[in-house]
Amino acid sequence: MAEALLRAEHLCKRFGGLAAVSEVTLDLHQGHIHAVIGPNGAGKSTLTNLLSGDLPPTSGRVQLAGQDVTGWSPEKISRAGLGRSYQKTNIFLPFTVWENVRLAAQSRRQHAGRWLHRANGFADTNERAERALELADLAGRRNAVAATISHGEQRQLEIAMTLATGPRVLLLDEPLAGMGSVEAERMVQLLRRLKSEHAMMLVEHDMDAVFALADQLTVMVNGEVIASGTPAQIRADAGVRAAYLGEETH
Ligand SMILES: Nc1ncnc2c1ncn2[C@@H]1O[C@H](COP(=O)(O)OP(=O)(O)OP(=O)(O)O)[C@@H](O)[C@H]1O
Image 1 (cartoon, rainbow, N blue to C red):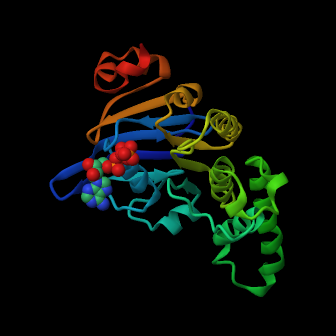
Image 2 (cartoon, rainbow, N blue to C red; image 1 turned 120 degrees about the vertical axis):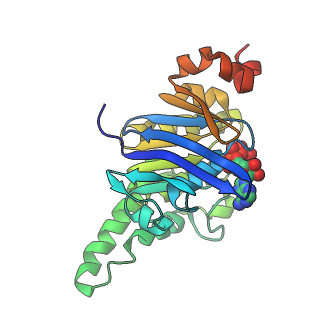
C-alpha cells in the first residue's frame, strides 16, 4: 500500500488523571475509509481533535503527507491539506448555501494578499466552492438560505464547506447524526463518492453505515485501541463483541 497520507503515532492525551487517548497509532490512506468506533467516552472526539490540531497531544506524533504537524494550529494543518467536519455545525444560518461554501473556500486564501494574485485567487476560490457544492450534491440548493434547508442537507452543506478548503484528508465526526434512513442513505452515497480522492477517517455511531463504508475499523474503549482490522475481522473479534459490538452483531 502507498505511504499513508496521515499517520498518528503513539498519540496520548491526558486530562488531569484521565487518559482520554492512550497510545493510539493509526494510518489513513487515499481511497480508504478508516472508521473509528467505540462507546460514549471512548476517546474518539479527543482523537479527532488531536489529529486536527484542535488539541495538542500530551505525547506522540502526527504526520500529514510525510510532514510532522504535531503541535501545529488547526489553521496551519487545514492549509496543509486536512479538512474536518464538526459534530456541532459551523454553518452561518442566515446565509445561502453558496455563500457558506464560498466563505469556507475563501478561508484557505488568507495568505494570498498581493493584488497581482487576486484575480487568479478569486477564480480558484469560486471553482473550488463550485466543485465542493457539486460533490456534496447541493448545486440545486445553492440559493436556499441555510436555515431553511433540511437537517440532512445541512450536514451535506457542512461536508461541502469542508471540501471547499481542498483537503486531501477528511476527518468526519458523526456525519449521520440525527438523520432518518433516507437522509442517512444519501450521506452514505456521498461519502462513497468522496472516497477515491481522499483519505478519510469516519467517527460514527451508525453501525450499518460504518460496516457499509469502512475499509478498516479501529475500535476504541476507554482511550485505548482494543482492535483494528477489516470489517470481517472486527465482526469476528471476540474482544470487540464482548466490549462493544455484541448486541449489534446477533
Ligand atoms: N476537555 C476535556 N477535559 C476533561 N475531560 C475531557 C475533555 N474532553 C473529553 N474528556 C473526557 O475524555 C474522555 C473521552 O471523551 P471523548 O469525547 O473523546 O469520547 P467519545 O468517544 O468521542 O465519546 P462520544 O461518542 O460520546 O462523543 C471522556 O471521559 C470525557 O469525559
